[in-house]
Length: 307
Ligand SMILES: NC(=O)c1ccc[n+]([C@@H]2O[C@H](COP(=O)([O-])OP(=O)(O)OC[C@H]3O[C@@H](n4cnc5c(N)ncnc54)[C@H](OP(=O)(O)O)[C@@H]3O)[C@@H](O)[C@H]2O)c1
Image 1 (cartoon, rainbow, N blue to C red):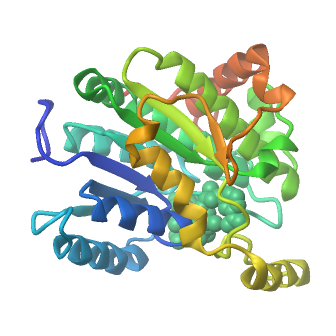
Image 2 (image 1 turned 90 degrees about the vertical axis):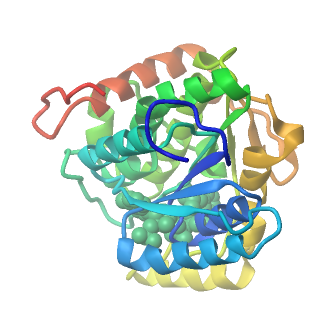
């Protein structure tokens, strides 16, 4: 059962963003086959609907999920704060529980682009939208955690986070240089936010972790420049499969041995040591505060409506 503000029994609900391909599709499929009611958050409905239908059909035929299995598809464009707000509010209104959020949508821009809100695009899509989504979903996550004691937030970050630099100002979101610096910054930003979120959620039954999937042969580094074509060709030959890349995400979201573990960064070998910047609690708190300020602004610097 879905809808309403009550707390329905029935399958656990898992939200997977960027589920229209690559690592996100594999995670959505795996969770559906395990019996989760999966909600795919995707920007292109025409591309994603056949994938949703295929996962649902497969889940209905599986033993763990069975004939009642459901996979839903909701539209969200992480390049638009208004779209993220509407999406998170729709999730909160439609589902009475939320047991897992896999914050996975991500992009990589070879040239500088600016969103409708005036932010550098890679940072906005990979990070700012994720942060806004998690904050808007926090009341539902807490309510679910209070009932089950086992809610999991899992973000797909990258080893690039170790090279990233961020500055705890709203201006940073508008000025960050594009390309690799923006990507690395967006991934460090994810780490800082998720670690802070994990702290804020301590004792509520909501855990938050991150993982680096490895170098995975997906579409994320595709582009029109010669460099992009060479990089993509190299990756398609040498990189991990999306199934291999998704393994940590699936484990952190659903394996019983990870219940209650929070504030960790996982990669191939397991739990990773954090960099000095990731461990800097002052930077983390100031950066998250700047993020929340930025996420409340529209392109003209006006405050957005509260949830
Ligand atoms: N591949 C790697 O080697 C690697 C390494 C480290 C970390 N990661 C991270 O893994 C995550 C998944 O990437 P992937 O490798 O699986 O690449 P992918 O196949 O390109 O998947 C990215 C997903 O994000 C979605 N997305 C992109 N921009 C969006 C937007 N504005 N709004 C909503 N959704 C959007 C894409 O939707 P569309 O289908 O509509 O484009 C797609 O579903 C990303 O966060 C990435 O940074 C990947």
